[in-house]
Amino acid sequence: MGQSHPEPIHCRLMQKYSASSILRHALSHHRKWPPLWRNPEPKPSYDVVIIGGGGHGLATAYFLASKYGLRNVAVLEKGWLGGGNSGRNTQATRSNYFYPTSTRFYDYSLRLYETLGRDLNFNVMLSQRGVVSLVSNPHELELTRRWANAIYLNGVDAQMLSVAEIKRLMPRLNFQGRLPIIGGFIQKRGGISRHDAVNWGFARAASALGVDIIQNCEVKAFEMNGNRVVGVSTTRGSIGAERFAMAVAGHSSELARLAGFRLPITSMALSWSSAGAPMFTTPIRSAAAWRTPRRCSRHCSSYFRVSAGCG
Ligand SMILES: Cc1cc2nc3c(=O)[nH]c(=O)nc-3n(C[C@H](O)[C@H](O)[C@H](O)COP(=O)(O)OP(=O)(O)OC[C@H]3O[C@@H](n4cnc5c(N)ncnc54)[C@H](O)[C@@H]3O)c2cc1C
Image 1 (cartoon, rainbow, N blue to C red):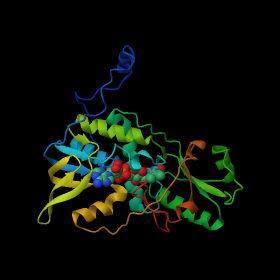
Image 2: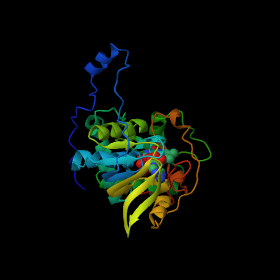
Image 3: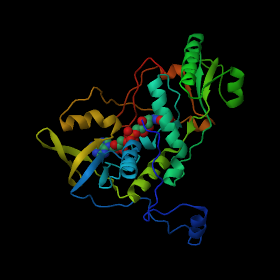
Image 4: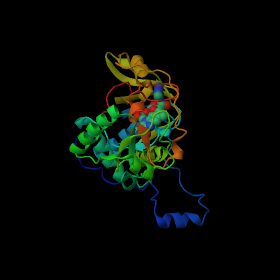
């Protein structure tokens, strides 16, 4: 995996955000800011079509354009940008994963986040206030020590916390609830980033580089030439491309079925709430909760994790 970050974008199409542009636009009561991205009609064909306008689809488009010079690219989104998982997640941004490969992968991603605001000239509101994982029984404490040590040995910051230290960090937590808190660990470089801003920042930068962002454009079927996908039928007409990418999260198995192949995953409905999140100053999670099976949603656009590990 390369370490280089994409070149910052300098494009006439993109309004530069700076203190002076904010002051200038104040004179017109901020009514003259240009739209963040263009709203083009779909072209008959592209070099690359990306299905799904969430974080992954938009980031793929941005990096194809900024890093690999591919500009004849479209992102097709059936609803609005970030209307899936990417605009409704808990916003935790972290790399505290157990397995070495996961640690490296997520830490690379976290490092991209650390410069993302500058690279996109868009405030993604990354706040590295730490991510805390809580523990409620001695067995879990032992596993968590192993987890934190593994992360640390893999070169990522991780630090065990005593109950007193957790109380100092989050005085509003109930330590004597059904699952009493007996310890935890923190990744201090972890934190939160504003999910809408991440989507909009990528969309704005990709659009400025020539990527067509096409909303309200649902892929309904694939057009095949033998075994090869050559086009998609959408609610906005037929669109051809040399290459297609699918970034549709919980809809992946469904879309793969439309394209004629089977993925080893199944999409299922789940409702999920992060309503309590604003109560706390730091993203927290319980190691116990994480080890409970979760399911995936195609309707609520949740994601799934059914595993017994902490990686
Ligand atoms: C409640 C919740 C909390 C989460 N918390 C965190 C967290 O704290 N930290 C973290 O890192 N991750 C978190 N995640 C996971 C994270 O949000 C997802 O992994 C990520 O947003 C997935 O991005 P994506 O672009 O792959 O999918 P999505 O954002 O779901 O985008 C897929 C897009 O594809 C579109 N689409 C589907 N079918 C079609 C079609 N046929 N044609 C055109 N478009 C289509 C959908 O409308 C959707 O907009 C959370 C997820 C949820 C649901």
